[in-house]
Amino acid sequence: MIEEPGRVVALEAGAVWVETRRKSTCSGCSAKSGCGQGLMDTLGVRERRGLIRAVCDLNLQVGDSVIVGIREDVLLRSAVLVYLLPLLMLMAAALLAAQFSAREPVVILAGLAGFFVSWLIVRMRSRRTADDPNLQPVVLRAMLAGPVGP
Image 1 (cartoon, rainbow, N blue to C red):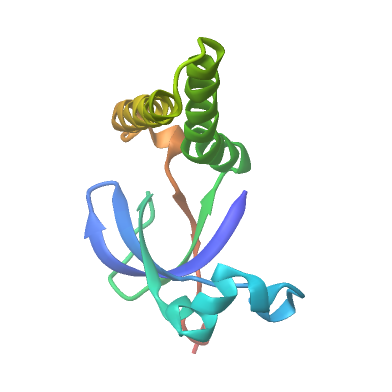
Image 2: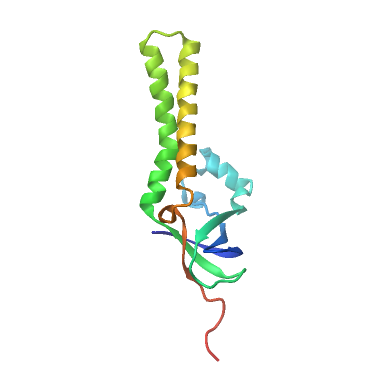
């Protein structure tokens, strides 16, 4: 389970909206000067906060600190679907057009069409699985805000 600390900003029936702080590891990376993420960190973009809807069965209030988690396999499958599928579809469509000795503009259009089809597939899948609780982030636990006891 991948865990991230956050703060509850809104309540919903069976879920909460959690604000998390985006972290970067650029300070420890040797390629930070030649990377787009390093540039974003230099510009202060890393300070932006993310908003996550997380399934929750705890009795929480706005402002509570929580730990939100998501399963590794869900994150990995989502990353493959969002990043790898469009790239593979773009390449496959372009290669297929090139196999039929199509001219370069047709090959480019075929690649773009493959990318667009994969975008539609990702969009339909995400809409179909948006309410699946097994694929949602969950609030794992609330963190104590102050000392316990008298």
